[in-house]
Every structure is written in structure tokens, then in C-alpha cells.
Image (cartoon, rainbow, N blue to C red; front, side, top):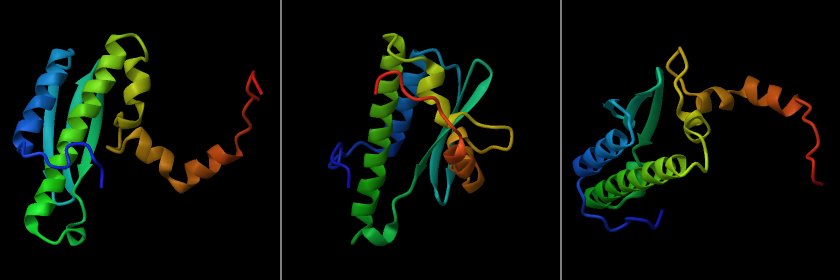
Length: 138
């Protein structure tokens, strides 16, 4: 299990609110959250593009009590908040572009993400067969 926020008592609702506040502070005006039995997720729109970040639920069988399971869920949301803040700070500082930082989460017309698409066996196979130029420095 991850170490960051492993003992957090911050409710998931507060983490979600802080994620929304963070996105708004960095200029993301369209934002939403979703819930499913598999886990929760956030959606946001930037320059006409939709981005989806899933927060899968931990495997309930991996925890001896419901309170430990809920603790793991709270921890995941704290980690997501930290990650989003770090990504947006890197963008703001000019270290990386928004597109490069969030490309994996960009939603495609069928609702999947770029990351989902690239993990499809046929795309992974195609990518492994692609000849790339050698690095300039070897």
C-alpha cells in the first residue's frame, strides 16, 4: 500500500471538494464527478477536450475490516489531490505543457481514454513493431 496519507482521516467528500477547488483555481471551468461500483472518477474540460481520471476502488478482500477498506479509499483521494496539484504546478511553472501532462486522461469519442486505447493489444503490438529513430545520444 502507498505510504502517502495512509492514516488520513480526511473524508472523501472533502478531498473531492479540494480537487474541484484546485481545478477551478487553475482555470478549469467545467468539472464533474462520477460514481460507480468499480470506483469513482472526475471529469473536466479544457479547451474543448474532455479528460477522465478514474479512482478505482481497492479490492475489498485485501482488507480485514470495513474501516481499513474505507481508509484505503480515503487515501486514494488524497493521493489524487496531491497528484493533480503537482501536475498543475508543473504546467504553471512551464516545465511541461497541459497536453503532455494530461494526455493519458484525454477522452476519445468512444468514451475511453488515450491510455485505454494505447493498452489495447492490437495497439501495443503495432507500437512494438514501429521503427523509431535512434536517440541522438547513445
